[in-house]
Image 1 (cartoon, rainbow, N blue to C red):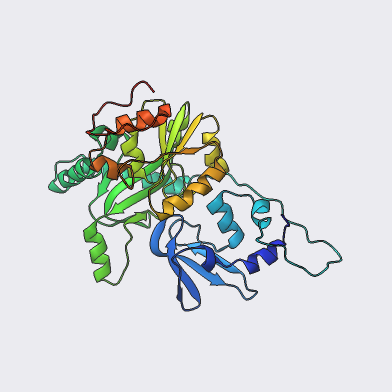
Image 2 (cartoon, rainbow, N blue to C red):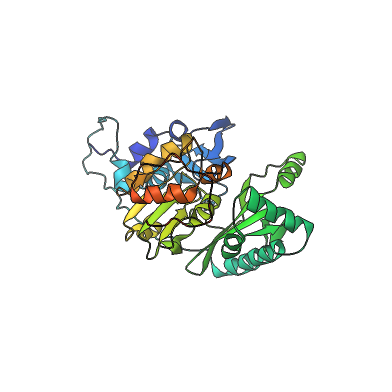
Length: 357
C-alpha cells in the first residue's frame, strides 16, 4: 500500500465523513464525541488551507487536533500506520527533495497534577461520606444503586462511589449533582465522573443550558483505564464499556479475573494502558450490543489482536441490562471463561462468584 504525504492525507480526509452524527453549525460541525458521548461537545473546524481540526469540550485537552490524531486515538494506530492508509494510489507532483515523514511519537499518559488531585479527591470522599449518611436523599440513592444499578454495598464502598446532592465548586471547577465515580490507578486520581440527576438536567434545560447524563469534573483525564490495578496478576480480563458495567460484572467473577473499561467504546488503550494487558492470557471484549459497540469491536481487536469477543444472551444490551433481567452472571461468566457454549439456563442470579474456571 502506497503512502501519501501527511499534509495531503489531512487535506483529503474529512472528519465529517468518518465521525457519525455531526451537523453543521455556522462555520463548524458539532455533534456527539465518538470517545465520550454527549450530544454537542465534539467540534470540527476547517483551517484556511483546507485541513479539518477537532476538539472535544469534555474529554479533550482544550486544543484542536488534526484527522491523523483522531484516527490514531480511535483506531489505536501509529502516525505512520494512519498516513500509510489510502483507498487508492494518488498521483502527486514530482519533488526535487522528498518530504520527510515525522516519526511517530507515543506519549505516556500521565495523571492530573497534584494540585487538581488533592481537592478532587477530598470532594469525592465527601460525596462518599454523604452517600453513607442517614439522610433521605442518601437512602434514595443507595436504593437506586442497589436495585437499578445492581451494585452491592461492598462494591459501592470499595469504589468510593458517592453522591453530590447539589452542584458546587471544587477548586474553581464545577462538580455536577449526581452519583460520583472516581477512577483511581496506582494511588493516583485520574478522573471524577458524575452520573447526573434527572432534576439537574431538567433545571439546566430550563435555564437554556445543556447538562449531559455523564459530566466529568473539569480537569479529569477521561480515557484512563478504570479498574486498571485489577489487571496486575490477572489471568483473564473482561473489557466492558462503562464504569457501572465494570463494577457489576466484577462482583461475579473469580478474584484472578479483572473487569475494566476505558469509559466508552470509542476509547482505545494507548501505550500506557495497553501495557496493562500484556501479561493477561485471556482478553475478552464485551462491548455493548448497539451500533457504537459493534463498530468499536473491530478497532479493539486490531489494537489487541489476542482478544476474543463475547456476547450476552437474550439480546441484552449490556451487563447491567442482563442483570436487571435476572440473568445469571456467575453461570454466564463461568461458561465464557471456560470457552464453553452458553447454557440455556442463565438465571436467576446467585451472589456467588464463578467457580471452577
